[in-house]
Every structure is written in C-alpha cells, then in structure tokens.
Length: 143
Image (cartoon, rainbow, N blue to C red; front, side, top):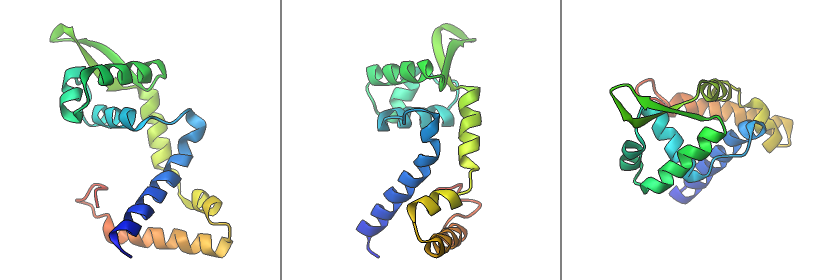
C-alpha cells in the first residue's frame, strides 16, 4: 500500500462512518463540520475565537453557527462575564446523537458495504485489529 491508497482508504472509512448519521438529517458541509468540531473542543467560545482557530472569515463562521443553531445542533447565549459577547456550545440533543453514533458498532455498516458475508466478517475483524494496533490510549483517536 502507498500513501495515495492509504488516503483513499481513509476517505472510504470516513464515508462509511458518516452513513450511520444519514437518518438524522442532512450532512454538514465541510466548513460546518470544522466549525462544529471546534465548538465541541472549545465550548463557550465566541464567533471570533472560532474564526481565529479555524481560519475561516467571521461571516462564514457566523453563518455556519446560525444554520447549525436553526437545526438544533448548536446553542448560543450571552457570556455571563460580558453580556455583549455571545458564546457558542453544542446542544445537548446533538451531544446525545453524537454519542449514539460514536458507540454504534461498525458491523452492519461494513455488511452493507461488503456484500459477501464472509468478506464482511473478515473486514470487521481486520478493522478491529487495525484499531488495536493504531489507536492507543494516549493517542485519543489521533493515530
């Protein structure tokens, strides 16, 4: 395997992982996904802080936050220390949905992607082996 094939495999695995949430509504755009992930990592941030960390222009961050707030994914509220500043956080219902998705076993997703039952079971076993080899306790899912 070379780097190009590894990247292709990574993209395919990401596609498969995203199919779990398709029933929960339309997928996020790549920009919305980056904003959402930043808010998850830094709850209570202002739009300006999100903009600084993501590198997007402030109007893009504001629009993304507004769209995701309308969909019930994000919540905004005044900063208790400075009422002029708005804080952004992930809505509780979105956190519950994320937890449900994150804890969904991959077996069924792989079975849909790999039609032959024996090959699907082998693929699941190989994914579990890769997980054990590449995801360590101190990597926190970063490899």
